[in-house]
Length: 49
Image 1 (cartoon, rainbow, N blue to C red):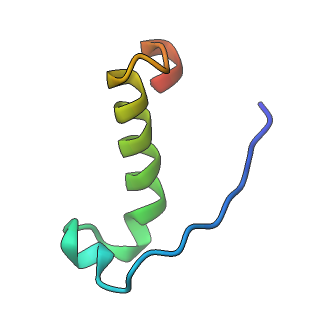
Image 2: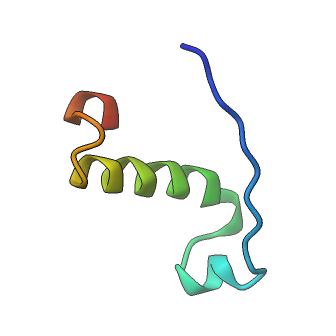
C-alpha cells in the first residue's frame, strides 16, 4: 500500500485537550480521521478499518 505523509501544526496543548499521550497522537489522529470519514460516507467500513 502506498502512503501519503503530511505534517499538521497543532497547538502545544492539543494532546491535553483531547486527553491523549503525545506518543499516542499519530494513532489517535488516524483512527479519528477514519471514523469521521466513514461517518460522512467517504470511506467504506473495510477501508476505515
